[in-house]
Length: 308
Image (cartoon, rainbow, N blue to C red; front, side, top):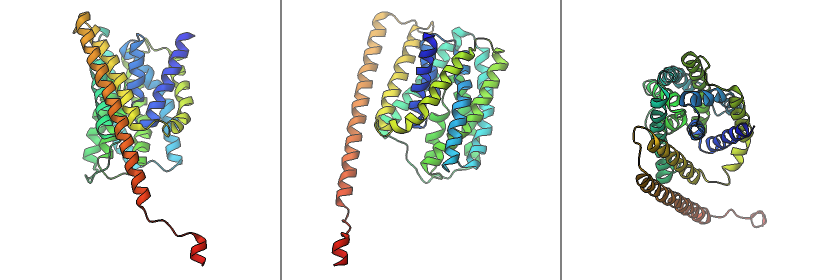
């Protein structure tokens, strides 16, 4: 029972992150599942099975509010599903000794990306680059493959790339990525069933993650107004980097000694604290600049003076 409660909290926390940033549900939840000792392939399978429900609910909500571009969903979702199936079967074929450090390397890279992206740039911005099928198809294949092999990556890879294209407004980018992720989750789940034959997948764990995610979905919309995405991205990126660095240092690949671990952890903690402090400072500066612009706007004449 204690494990199920912990998993529900993992699902809740991961969905809070994803709902606030538009990415990192899979990366966050898979990292936490690995931290409690879950088999890598089973961890990714568990997350993707839970995501079938969370992405379906998320996609339906985005569709209801007009946040979905169905052409983008089709052009990136189908190749994304193909890449996810390939990634799931590939990960399932690896032994646990190899799969765990491989997944940790991918998650570490994604964690560094999230940390640097939100610390240095904040939310991705739009540009004038065109958005074409020849861009979306390979993007979907790569993002889908990384999502399955790393237990996450669809949002961190796909969302900034499409935002940078400049052809969709941000709300439609997030809505289209979240909606197309349903196909990725289904394809990855099928791939894991083929590769694992259901072995190592605990459906009560899936249900616990799903319940936590569904509870968190409406809370995330409220949380994002309290915790700025830039600061939250730096916080979450640091958690992912620290956790997966620990896995790699303990693996047979590196087998680091205690003094080496101490040095590495100290560097990560210092860099993480500096990143969060930088994000807080940048957020306050941006907020102050917005306030100055608002104060500089010409004031509308009051109704009484106009009528006079």
